[in-house]
Amino acid sequence: MPTVPGTVIPDPVSQVAGQGEFVITPTTGIRATGDGLPVANYLGELLRPATGLPFPVGDTGDITLVIEAGHPAGGYDLVVTTTGIRLAADDAAALFAGAQTLRQLLPPAIEGRAQADAEWVVAATVIHDYPRFAYRGAMLDVARHFFDIATVKRYIDDIAMLKINVLHLHLTDDQGWRIAIDRWPKLTEIGAATQVGGTGGGFYSHDDYRDIVAYAASRYVTVVPEIDVPGHTNAALASYPELNCDGRSPAVYEGIEVGFSSLCIGAERTYEFFDDVITELAELTPGPWIHIGGDESLTTPEADFLTFVSRAAAIVASHGKTVIGWHELGRSTRLPAGTIGEYWSFTTAQADAAAHALSFIQQGGRLVMAPADVAYLDMKYDDSSTLGLTWADGATSVPDSYQWDPAAILPGIDDDQLLGIEAPLWTETLATIADLESMAFPRIACVAEIAWSARPSVPRNFADFAPRLAALGLRLDAAGIGYYRAPEVAWHH
Ligand code: TNX
Image (cartoon, rainbow, N blue to C red):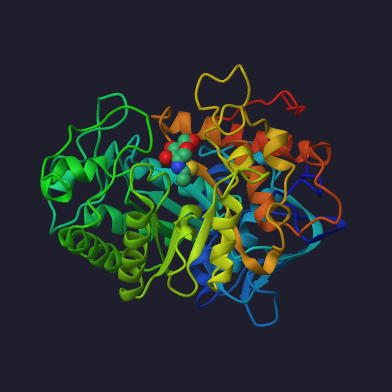
């Protein structure tokens, strides 16, 4: 049975049903050239396991991928007729987004990794589509619990399916330092040996990190590394006594409190340290952004915080990267031009958060919206959740994660001031890929739709979205991705 039109997530800008269907056969090939070839190869890899068909990639084939000028930024056109499929976009990243749409037009069994029995057909349709925001992010906290390369790659595949194109890696926190810094080896010798709960830990070598970045790039996902300073630094402070104002290292930390640690703001060594870290990280990071945290520095006096932030941000800028920081960074009025703020207060802003966020706009920057009460994937769904936290205004149901708009939170802010949105997944309570996926899915599909789909003229209504989530559930079942069967959705089985 062909998939009914209208089940794609994120919802395309326009989709019109055609007549008949395109039938995939053993001779169906994928035609592409140049920059389209990697996308064609990716699509072939996606389609071969479940169909058991060869999908040769080359200069002939009924599925044609075309790179050509004339499409909206990041967008694509997809035309399915009885005789073929044509997917066209301005660049490979947009073509890849279109390939995710095509994937969802196939029966859910396409997601299985073993050969499946299904009618491999695509209903005729014409889709014209483009993203609302350029930055469609997911954040993974690898500091509270460490996740190995295979897990991170799987999460990259999970998010890429929903046209998310940024992976923000929260690499350092009180409980662990997860990226090797050659000039400061104890950061990982000491600072990476721990995690929440006291067993395990780990870190990425430079080659490991390059491997993640390259894999992300193969899915047209940009990695944004975060070194969270000056708070959230117990792992670094435990590794090097000289980073502490009293010259004494605290014990390593395996609990889940926040806000108790701070680098020593008055010591020049702190800035040498930070410059060394950013030097190595900038060299490993092809993307334009480096995130420097700045949240919850509750023990850093205000004047010290301001001193530190302007120096740290200038260091990142001196390495040619654009700074991103949590909205507290906006307490500083001396940020490099174009600094991006990440808003993590609520859909109704808490005291000061709005002012801090708007400060980035006043300084020529833009915002990434990650409102904690709707976009945080680590919040419990409801009372039945065994994993997750509740501090962000209680539990976050699946409808909660869908019925909000990023441009409706701060006064005077429109889409032009927003770089995009992000769904953070903090891991104080999450230790395995199953934990991650069961918290992310299905809420990440809600956030992905808000990031990509056109701004609706009336508030989003979960009842319209729920049938598409149910359709996505079938795909997740076939893919072996666990998800929360929210009671507000009529899941198919
Ligand atoms: C707040 S959100 C934090 C994190 C925690 C998270 C737990 C933000 C910028 N900081 O340190 O992990 O809450 O939900």
